[in-house]
Image 1 (cartoon, one colour):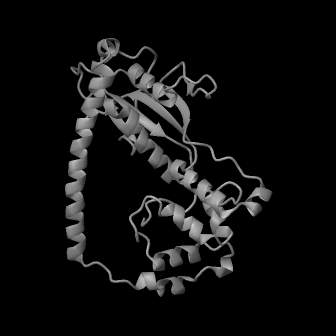
Image 2 (cartoon, rainbow, N blue to C red):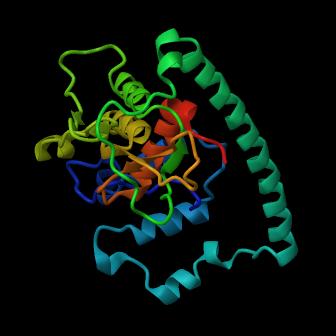
Length: 274
């Protein structure tokens, strides 16, 4: 919660450089990477000491619950109810401003993608070209949204985003021919490093690998599914669709980050504001 990122993605030495840095006692390299885009002094020495002690490779070297409670970082002053309310009021103002900016960006993107393309503008309200399933859940999930945009245009935009340069060597996502379902991957796959290389790796080499890993956070397998929402009234003229971003990836932090970036940079134009 403090770092707004997990300490590592996989507890495998030759696959995850963050876990390798911890397991090999290279805490300075670990923190250099995590502090890369943080203000100076963001992580206190007490916080660093607490985290590294909890992530020791040898379980017997980790502190007990009682030792954790008496750690200096845990003994800091606790915010009062008034301080907490003040902080949340401040955050509410920031969130409200950010949502207004998102609305403006969404409209600009829609103008660019749809209104700026006569073909897409003409097809924006067209019915789906293929069979479309009916949304069966009671409510939309965390990374789902409503849209009135033609599902074919939403699909086209995702496919263009996944391979903007039309690289023939890049693996194509799976696209169902029966309904609106696309399976794809986002991010860079971290290749396992041979065990002998992890033992001879210099500090500079580890720093470079950590920085690259921090930027990508690995690869996540995802899918986008579009279904039709049941009409609220029989007289409803426009169809409304549910666009869902889903993943079986056990690393939910990585999936949440990828889904948020995808909505912001690719699908924002289609989101229907309630």
